[in-house]
Length: 298
Image (cartoon, rainbow, N blue to C red; front, side, top):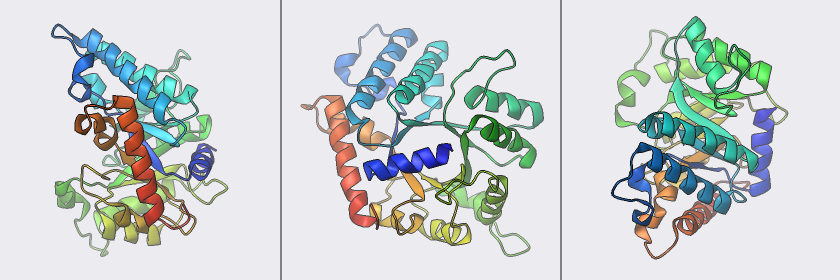
């Protein structure tokens, strides 16, 4: 199962770091850009940047998360760079997370799922990521098509449960008549959706996005659902520390991956004398050592 493969790569690397390739022109070294760059040339350079970063850090990490919004800005050229980035990461043995936060209902949800996890109605693959992030707001009929493809193609999803943005409490912390918070209700549904996709390590391929800055809520969800695998954004630039994340992991250092985007791909901005890919590697090594120092079992 894909979740078992993910965990085995974490165990092998002793590192739950996922590099977020949220790459755009603004994040590229100035030396890569030209005054007359348009979307086609920028997209080509973004892929060149991503490829070099993957080559440099691929032996240190289990996977990458690729946020599609940064690529959609450049229209069809950006989408091509997105596709090529996922394909290249997979060719280097990395687990890929398409951060697309997709959702709709019925046949439209199924079409989204086919785009990221499965095959189109003519038998072609679009992005073919290992995982995709999904928004549960529309309920089960917007999620089940993804679950069906997870079973069919050995894929996974991460459901938005408790996010790291400041206004997440406006909806996610609302209290229900039975005393649960909305994020707790969402975690319960997530567990139900993933009950048939539990791997040999006890974790499921239907996981939860839980903001790394939401320590108390993460601890509650972990106690509520010990077999739920977490994707933890918010380390570094958003303020979360390794000690904040410890509650999300089990005694063996498993149960979650930690995403870091700008802290890695923009590390060269703070170290202009270091090549961007070398700066990214240094940032990954520092993050790995930080996590190992805070999380038991790593």
